[in-house]
Length: 246
Image: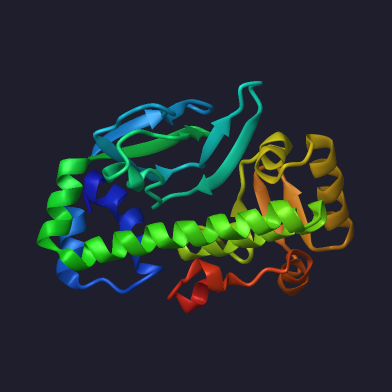
């Protein structure tokens, strides 16, 4: 498999986690023209106010959607992993109303909107599948609203860790309930509406309860059922068809 095909494979794994693909659909995705770029950590891939003519596929690394308040406070809206196209909505919403940035060094594949539209015209079911992906994005947002509005800090972090484990497992990036999670406590705090000090305290509690370990960039879930209970986590909102991911 050449480099371009290898990078498109992340997208295929993502799409196949939410619906089966026909062989001709996989082949069309593998032929999709990409412009590859390495983006350093803590850099915008696309910024609020931009009018992009491309959408970006995360090939590897961690990225996030975010909005800055006038005071410079950051609210992280979602985290993105290999296979995600976080700004797919820019196909139809021409002006970005939020920014998309890297949290660690990332490899990004840019896909021209014209090429995406041609792909969907030639393979209408892929258009339906991209639409399904944006609807799942909306389902994730709804869960995050519940988390921010109604869960205590302990439940907020537990729920997020459950969500990331399931999504990363669907992307084949989890081994034995362990995965790379290169997030700082400040980034967790910006996503969950708490202080970094509070995030640190909750993580200590989760460790003390023997639910997780987190050493360096590696997080391991020791008690999956216990972590799910702590976060009131039900993966149904992710609408995955890969049963092994659940």
